[in-house]
Image 1 (cartoon, one colour):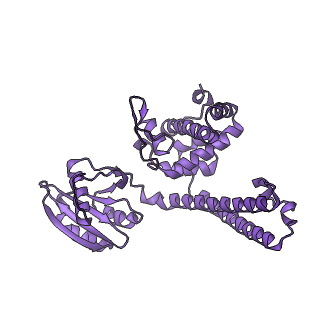
Image 2: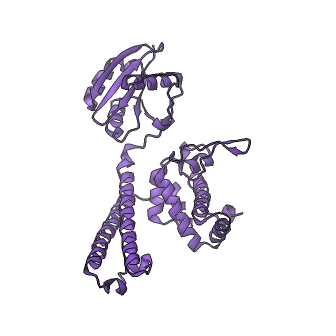
Length: 336
């Protein structure tokens, strides 16, 4: 007999359900998020258990890692893709766990990628760097807006970073103190960003299949590491379109008879890869003439944001083949 299990995971507890081939519930209980307790509850069924489905919530790391170390086959559920039966009047945690087990039994459970535990912490550290960069940009924009409101003059980001003399000459002490507060925070964030980058680079280098990313105009060591660590095993993407979609470089449209019938989930995919390729596009158009010409043609037809996204889409497709085939970047192929 084959058995199927699923865990409806919450912040401090979970509901564990085990069913058989006939959808009969053999075990159902709310448990604390303690790997020893969960493992003990599953142990009587281990020999016949085909897998354990765990919801992809913010706290899945410990539970999934612990179960896999104990020999269980785990599936990370893509909760955004799970569809409930529309005729239901009422559901609860027990039913949700049963439903996931049922979908696993039918072989139609939508699952996500379980990133290797060994590299997960360093990948999350690159995400921490992205968070610090966003906070730094927010402080720079705050300085820019405050100065603009006060003087009617818009300062460039470079002048703000260099702490232009015009900022120091602000007469109002309250405004000057507000600007200096943002400036101090910006410098502190930049110092920490530099430290994080150095720490990451001291621990991990680009694998051979990712070394060729450095041949792409606009991709340096930090962006290449971000792309490598967020992509993981490139072979998990069967087609280039799958990868471009995962990088959030594809429109979310629903068409019927050439008419728009709504939009899909724009947030499906990896937001960090989406950011990385937009950054790469911004740098690429500065240093590559063909990329700049492509961007200019697009921006004349639509707008600068969509033009940047179109260039990011092209770069994501190029990087897919670069990583898959371990070949250098060829700009003539990209803009043929």
